[in-house]
Length: 196
Image (cartoon, rainbow, N blue to C red; front, side, top):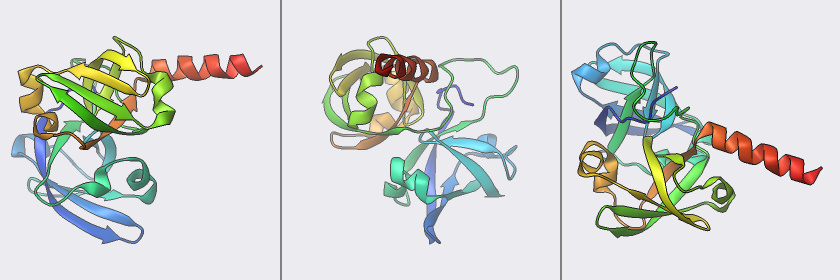
C-alpha cells in the first residue's frame, strides 16, 4: 500500500525488452534507495512494481505484459522523470489516501488552465468519477474538482507541480489512473444490485 504522496522524482536509466515484458531501471537518490532490497514494492508513476535488483542508487524492476497493457510504463524513455513512492510502513503518516498501485487504466490531459488540469479517462473509468472524490494520477493523491462525463479536473498547487511529474506534463500526455478503492467497491456493488 502507498499514500499517494510522491517522495521524489526518479529518472529512467534503463528500458530493455525482456521476453514479452520489459526491464526498467530508475535512478533515484541515495536517501530513497538505500534501504530497498529485492522483493520490496515501489510505486513508479503509480504502478506497484517489485524491486528485482538494486545497484547503488539505481533500482531495477521487471514489468509484465499485463502491466504494460493498462499503464503508461511502456511509453517511457531513458531520461524521463517518474514519480517514486516507497510502500507504506507501520507508523508512517497518511498524507494522501490509501493507494494500492493497481492502475485501472489511463487518461489523457485534454486541457491545462493555470493550475487546473483536465483529464479524459478511458470510458470504463468514467462511472467512478465524483466531485471531491480521491483519485491517484501517476501515483499522486489528488482531489477531483469537477466531472463532466469521462473528463475530470484537479487543481494543482505549486508544491505538487514541483514535486511530481505533473509539472512536466503537457496537453495530450497520458497518465496512469487509480480509482480510490472504496469508491470502486461501492459503485460496483450498486451496479451489480441494479442488475438483480
